[in-house]
Amino acid sequence: MGIINTIKGVANHLPGIRQPERYSLFDMFMEEYSWALTTIPDKTLGDLSTYYQAFKKNVWVRRCCGVTCDEMLTEGFRINNPNKTQVNYERVNYLTDLFNAPAGKYAEETFSSLIKQIVPSWKVTGDAFIEVNHDKVFDNVPNGFKFIPTELMGYNHENDAWCIRNTGYIFEPENIIHIYEPPIELRGSKWGTSLIDTIAMNISLEVLGLNHNKDVFENHGLDPRGVISFDKELKSQQVKENILRLKKQKNKKGIIAMQGGNYQQTNNTNKDMEFLELIRYSRDCIITMFGVPPAKVDIIETANLGTGSGESQDKNFGKVINSNCKVIENAFNKNLGRSGFQEVFEFIREDHENKLNRAEIEDKQLRNGTTFINEVRSGYGLEPVDWGNVPMNYSQYAIATSPDNLDQSVLITPQETEKDLQKSIILERLKGMY
View 1 (cartoon, rainbow, N blue to C red):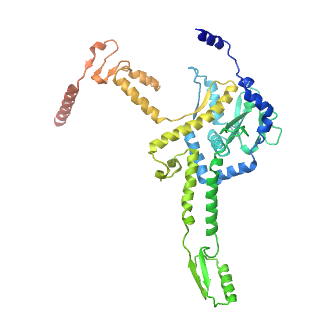
View 2: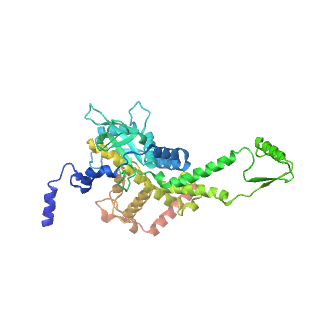
């Protein structure tokens, strides 16, 4: 009883606004020594340029980001209030319009375009920033969202706030949404970590291999793997004239004709044959890092990338999409909560597996008589039916006529059902004959 009374006493004095940093030894330590531990306040423009190049020029990086966006946007979004049964349609409609037109009715930005900026920036650079504008006339409510590229953002350690890089423009906490991949080290912990850092070596190998083959294909002259041997009795002036003539020859697929010389082509090396394997290896590492199944990026040879049916891959990818959606939802909803909104923004995720399990459970409950038809229909928002408030005991082949006369239920045996079916077939044949 002492523990229970203690809990009740604590529950009666709950803080309205939680500020755990007041009692945190870590926060106290960081206030004194953060200058020595976070010496890299901003992401370098060189790193950001590398991230952007990986997104623009690597087909698998861009395809993985595109697939993630497409899956998140497939079902759209909704505004919901999970804590109340009655819906405030005025607030719901306002927030719905806010997300559908994040920059206003007359701007080009839409919800889809905003997500297609947020997700690649988050996955590729490690950070995605959204400025939240507030209406100064109507209770300072949010009235717009604006995506800010990562290269414009900096962190002001003096004011402990995000800012426009190298300027005096500082964002208040309620005016910025930061979606990021959190790091596990302390240095530079305000910034997110990029997936590109993990697969940078794989992308570099692919780029170097492509550049090497590009140089070979663009070479005007002989195949560099070919060898020309001149007769030792041939004069040096004649050798120079032949070399000069071959350099001037632009058709590398033409016929080589020379006097006193033999041309021999060497075989492909093992490194040349491994180029395609290098490309596939780089591709597999990229889609693995982004958590995208091979079939989603139009790769047919899924056997090389892991076992499992298409259904199991869709199930695993669904978990990845749910996690990504949750990260974005939490960031927006935290900002909406600061403005006093109890409504939440959420993506609509179609979960076919849970729907199938639910249907199977409801079917079993109907068959053993533990639930009624109208109870199931109400769960789907359907109107009740007159005959839906009585149990249907399929296991005993009995159907109750009404809730008041359950003792007068008609018992239907399998034999009687078969006889009735035979009679109906005979009657149909007789009608057809006469």
